[in-house]
Length: 203
Image (tube, rainbow, N blue to C red):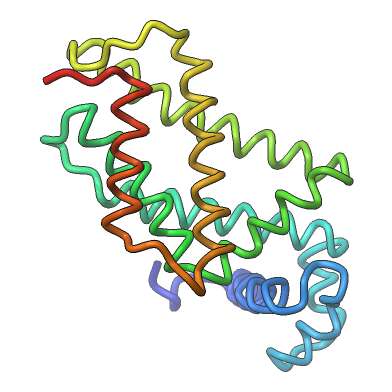
């Protein structure tokens, strides 16, 4: 979007979110404050409070922004000529790659995974994101059935959830082990194996 067409309020809001990503990633949720954010981008402490009622509201907005950008980045990789199998492979590979490349954003999502276990508001947010991820995967699974290249017998909804859970595991492992990172080709091979086993792919 052209910055000249964005209101001053929206620009400030985006500046706050951008800095929140950096600080949440570096210091965690508990140690990050509105004052720290205000000092970093040279605005008054009242400004973050004006745009976000409290820190949990800012964290939620930050997570929603990150997820939206992730989904946009992955969607750009799809081609109209892709069959369901190609789309599914691109989805799983790009999801893991995105977590590796976008370190700060990925670490904020890891914070969500933790805090959703202790705070209901974040649990609801995580459930919403999970449902959307499963919906995207299930749409591709059903397309593969129509194209007669997927031959899975499990309910598509359950298979989509299982694949989504497996992807979270891959992403967490990729982040946790990045100092001794698995070669991307090796990871892509394992992701392909996972997809082939789950969907019972046949050309």
